Length: 425
Ligand SMILES: Nc1ncnc2c1ncn2[C@@H]1O[C@H](COP(=O)(O)OP(=O)(O)OP(=O)(O)O)[C@@H](O)[C@H]1O
Ligand SMILES: O=C(O)[C@@H](O)C(=O)CO
Image 1 (tube, helix red, strand yellow):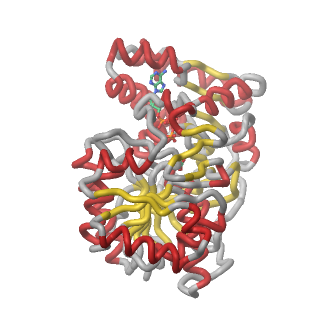
Image 2 (cartoon, protein in one colour; image 1 turned 120 degrees about the vertical axis):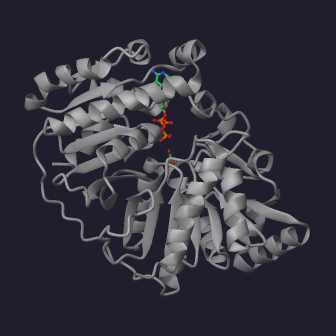
């Protein structure tokens, strides 16, 4: 297998978002969980998205894991590697976008790296280096209350410079609108002045197409699904990947019980849970009991088992920003997050043991904990439920067929849970 594109995603929902975008743009794509084992039988593909759970871990570990993924991808012929980060640039001053970018840039020997989280289809645009979420700057968006990495600065040139050892510059929209040669000239000028990374503005898909073409001159780029779209279209246009080749993902019904788990506390997910209450039984976990080590997972499983026979159910740990802040101040951010993620993984494992083969999970960290516990090595991409969220069919799981949807916290419409289950018969 010679890859046209290798991707390293810093969380699992982000990986499925990217795999979805690449598939829709015509690349045969597989999403793997971690660096694939040598004996994992992968189909012939144009792109592999290696999913890591490296967004919120210690920066040194994120670097080591990302480099291992990069070595695997380059070993399969990938001439270009995309480090997939969140479209809302989720990170802290300690990383992990900057440290991972610096390490991968040292490996690729690029003098400058193009960086953009723009993903216009989901309302993420970058102008003058400032990230907008819909109509508001990042620091006024719900991301200011993110439980793990609250975002308080919209200026990505500043945000990335605080995390990286290199100087960070800007390729603005005016330059971008003048086309690929203007962008190349600007990058060369920035590189001559010792700048090693450039935030690139992008508002429309056509901007991403320009970025994709220029990025292919380099060995590495950093961004969200939008730059994935640009790279995929550039690869197809250059004849390096087969246009219109789609994954042969069967849509055959799986049947049996279905369940949803929500660990995301984003406003979008809170709205989706409220809508789900109208159409399916919903159990709200008690986070205090989870952290106290009481068997909240067993209580949830007993509750679920009584209901699974009659239709889908939803189990949520999600709380409002005020409740999350109060819990974190009592127990610490990481301890609270970790305990709840592990409870979700326990519940997912119990649900699968009870026959669930259709599972929807909301939240990137939550999805990571669940998929790891289920031991699923990879996914093929099926139908698109909402922008950035596909149906995923597990490959090589050895536990029978299973379909999942891993929803990024902020993605999906109000009826997301029902929309997902409707496409997962
Ligand atoms: N009630 C709660 N109080 C505090 N933390 C919670 C609560 N419920 C869930 N969490 C934790 O909050 C974090 C949510 O992160 P997660 O990545 O799953 O969602 P997200 O950030 O909204 O999604 P994404 O990363 O896809 O944007 C997890 O660590 C989860 O365990
Ligand atoms: O880019 C995004 O917003 C998502 O794919 C994601 O990474 C959220 O975790």
